[in-house]
Amino acid sequence: MSSKRKVLHIVEAMGGGVFTYIVDFANELVSNYDVYIAYAVRKQTPANYREYFDPRIHLIEVKNFGRSIRLAKDIAAYFEVLQLANEIKPDIIHLHSSKAGAIGRVAFDGKKVPLFYTPHGYSFLMRNTSPVKRKVFRSIERICGKRACTTISCSVGEHIESQKITKRAVYVNNGINTDTLQDCIKGINVDGAHPFSVFTLGRISDQKNPELFNRIAMRFPDIRFLWIGDGELRNVLTAGNIEITGWVGRQEALQYALACDVFVLTSLWEGLPISLLEAMYMKKICVVSNVIGNRDVIREKRNGFVCDEESEYVNAIQYIRSKDVSSIAEQAHEDILNMYNTKTMTKQLCRIYETAIKDIGLN
Image (cartoon, rainbow, N blue to C red; front, side, top):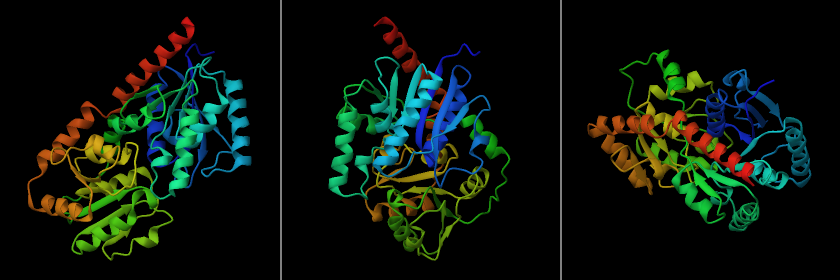
């Protein structure tokens, strides 16, 4: 039997950036902990998702997890994760995203087993929902924030929001596994003579603001724009110079990204996007919206560009086309190596885990 401490991650939203976060973090963590992941599959979860994880990691699908609020399903999910925890008997429980965060903080008592919650972008910041819904989401967070649980935000901006909700709040910046990413990139050949191209990556949804991406593309009919991903709002991308790849495997997505020059992220809200960190590592010039997460990482004309209006995106792309911006790309790459990598992130999280275990042992 393993003598390692058991960590149970509960992840409802296992797709997109959260999926990459969990894969990289769990694969790094498994050397020192016995890692269990209770998860739900989403449309954007890779079909071969199990292959991304170290074989020592225990993957357990939660059948009743669902994205929207449905009382019967949520109650069933509550009992399902409760039973899983009773069987696993974890030393640490870490909840990820709003749904798992709400269910988990009701289900578990953080006074007995250290309990952590990472929002990965608060639901009450979603600008595609009504003010009434956002108030409901914020109220749920405030009620759950009174539980014995430490919120670990993934960016400075998210941490500021967390402090408005709970006194038990810390932050550890998101990071990417640069070794794994570099290994993937090494096997990809890119034609150096490719046309100047702009890309983004993710689900074509309200959060990513495809309407604005489309308007920017229409301002540059001579530039190739690429959306790596798919989603319910693909019909919004009407500009003739936009190509939609659909959902593709990681290697193919990286091949598309490497053949582009500028990464544009028009999001209405974020946590700290993995796609941005990976673009920075790949030395793509990043032009991003002025929201939590994006603005915590990007500093204007030092390692990228932060924009509020359509005209600012246009000006940034024009600037990138006409100037030598190699120093900006290099600085972005250095920032990832120094601050936003999985090894640094995991060390910080492990210190938080171990401190919490010791504190409970002293009580």
